[in-house]
Length: 223
Figure 1 (cartoon, helix red, strand yellow):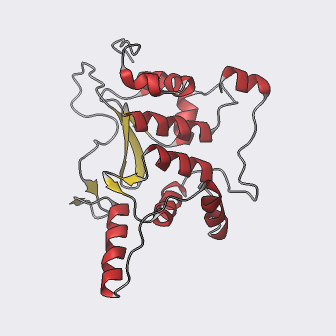
Figure 2 (cartoon, rainbow, N blue to C red):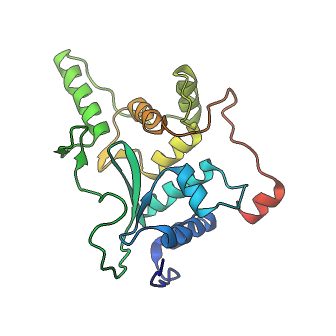
C-alpha cells in the first residue's frame, strides 16, 4: 500500500514516545487503511506489525498503544464491541470513499445500533451514581488504585484476560479519565476491560501477576 512519507522528527508528540512505541507507530502507519484506521486488538497488531519478532509480547503492544494514545497521535474506539484505532492527522490522498474499518464517532454506538452521547462505561458509572442517590448513599471521591490492588481484584474475580500492569499503565497515561470525564470507579473499568477482551486469547492472570521475562539481548534491543 503506497503511503505518503511523513517526517516525524519535528513532531513534538514523538519526543514523548519511547523508542519502542515510535517503532510501533511507524509500522502501524504503513498497515493502516487509507483513513488511518486499523484493529486495536493487541493480538492482531502483533501478528501484522511484528510477525517475525518472537520477543514482542501482546503486553508490549498494549503498552505502546497506550503510549501513542496518551500523547495524542492516535485514538482508540469501540464499534459493536470490537476495538479499533485511528491515526490522527493521517492526511493521505485517497479516492476511496469508505475505509476497511468503521469510522470513529464523537458518540458511542449502542448494542441496538443507535448512537448515544454517553459511552458504555460512562453510562454504567452515571447509572450507579443515580442509584446511589436514590438510596442516599454518598459517593466517595475517586482514589486511583495501586497495581497491587488491581492484581488482587483481578485474582478475586478470576479474570482471564486482564493484565493488571497493562490496565494500570493504560489509565495512568490517560490520567484516570473515561473519555473527557474523570473516572469514578476503577473496578467498573476493570470489569469492562475483561469483558471487551474475553473473545481474545489474552494472557491468563497468574498468581504472581508478573509478566514473562525477556532475554538480556531483547532488553538491550528494546523489545
